[in-house]
Image (tube, rainbow, N blue to C red; front, side, top):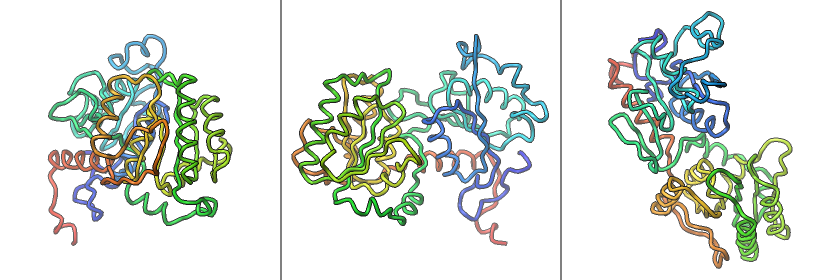
Length: 346
């Protein structure tokens, strides 16, 4: 076992608390949301290891090898001893690096892959996939939504601070979280117009709005959202300064989120508050399965073209990050010899 591996259960009850962890991932915001959230739930001491592949190695990933320029294992490089206790990887480009790390660190290394690596069940000790993914197996963990950084504890802490500009908004405060076009959803002009009509109907019912676009939000979607909410009490983030998303998130009475964003939809479901999902034209089967599951759990409902009553349903908050972290800890404990909790009090 690596020298920094915990030898007894941590007083926090988190058996991996304080363990050295490497997060190996491509530099993508969605991946960072998932990996950092999981690492924080585990309580590990993590380092981010950004990886990229180019040329033939990019096209052969996840099956290729680590580029020679990485000088994997050489002193002073990004990938050198001391090796971590646990590694969390996500993204096709991360898998060659994880494979090489396992070869060098040996069986004491505990490995986790988020999302199907497409390289078989032996790629890691634990593979997490969302429930709408088809992969299953003895070392596969599933949850309805993705891991993220909004633990119940963080939500409670954020709610303890109430920015005055949000406090001034009338109830119900609806957070509008805008994604945008991707390979599954086209967001036609007609789609954008449907969202405008739905938001206008919410405004007529007396809602106020907290609106934040993302990097994928196309200009016309911003324009119709602006037009729909212009005469209502609102905060509309224009992209300058810090994103107020965390404050919008915890102080919203309800949400409108676009269906293309799996991460944002899942985060909303951690609150137990109503989530309206706007469905543009399109949607691959995996997206359809994801949204169908959340509707089945009564966490989300499709945003009607015209809303005739304010959202008021409730459900048990979905703590996907906690579900995944506890499963990883259970599997980790099976790998190790531990003292009992009573022995940790000496």
